[in-house]
Amino acid sequence: MSLGFQGFTAELAYHDLPEPVLAVLRRSLLDTLGVAAVGSQTQMAHAARRGAAAVFGPTASGTARVLMDGTPLSPAGAAMAGAFAVDSIDAHDGTSPCKGHAGSAVFPALFAILDMKKNLKGTDFATLLAIGYEVSYRAGLAQHATCPDYHTSGAWTAVGVAAAWARALKCDTDTIRHAAGIAEYHGPRSQMMRCIDHPTMLRDGVGWGAPTGVTAAFLAQAGFTGAPALTCEASETFWSDLGALWRLVEDTHYKPYPCCRWAHPAIDAAKELMAAHDLHHLDVAEVEIRTFHNATRLAGHAPQTPDEFAYSIAFPVAAMIVRGQLGAAELSPETLRDADILRISHATTLVDDPYLTKISEGKRWAQVAITLQDGRIVNAEPRTPRGDRDLPLSDAEISDKFHLFADPVLGDKRANDIEKLCNDFDSLSVTGLNKLCDLVLTTPDA
Image (tube, rainbow, N blue to C red; front, top):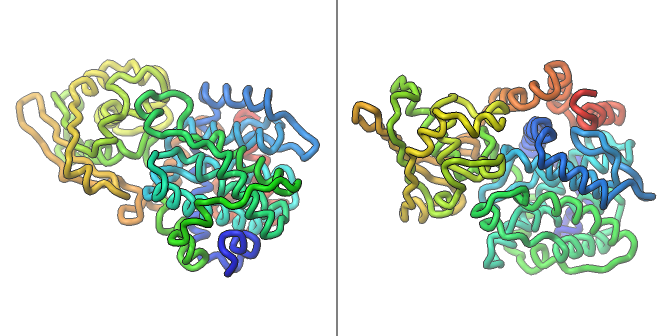
């Protein structure tokens, strides 16, 4: 694998994947499918599927079913609808150094490959996933280092998806290079802070990043030229150790809560303070959250939509104080009108802390203080969120999160069947992998 990212993409084999890489892919598969299950029920997912069907219906290149829905579309359409569905619930895996997410684009796009071809086995799937993640992460690092704007994940996952799809289409190294260049050029260079300041269904850009990558691979296969991808070829710093050091192992984090990760250290701190001091939410008078600058720009204290909930901080912290969890039930419209949660949310102050801003490069810091009705103040030390490598979620916690999201939508039996297949997906035969596809590429009530 000495030919740069295109040689890595063309030559990578399953036996090149270290066990830590496979462990991350297994966890991310299960985690993403849980998010996809509950995401498939959202208004955003329904609107995205209708839009994708209008633009990207079945084509001569083949069809693929939409994740957790089953609608047959073109591969690009299935990638789009599936990515929007996963992105509609802000609980999927991510990468802190890139300030974004790869799995929400990579998994829907690669399930479209599996469904279109129907002749791949677990080792093939694992290899394609490793390519999609690793190329995405490194393209994201290069982009953040060389561009003044903070772009959404769709901008760099388009490159990873294009590489993985080009490999699946058996393209040579030159064609892979052009596919990456096409995807980077046409990928959505959307500004992330715009959606944080004005939360809507735009989210993290992966709904366009995924189909852009798929389309780029087909264009390159047809002879369309697009090289070079500057994030892959003009930033050697981020590619020199490709295949030796795995960024997907070093950088992947998991989110215990369905909201922006910038809110997570405050949620963790509030949860621990409530438990440590045996508090009831009626004991709470006020909350102060000291955190880094961008986190203080998260949406207001009374979100009106799921999108505003996803990009808020005071409200999810208040929901944790009142409910003691942030699961599928907390994503319901009724939660947004919960008087107890709103009381605490409105009594929450966000403080832009210069020191926490300074140290929040690659990490996310917050400090929480709760003022009680009797005037006492309980404080938590400044902290970073659980789910990073230094504060990892256990396999049991990943499983619990999957069932918290998936069981109410899919039912216990189907969720259990999916979990069993995900836990060793890379050892599945063609028949076994197609069985997994049938479980996750059909409607929840199928």
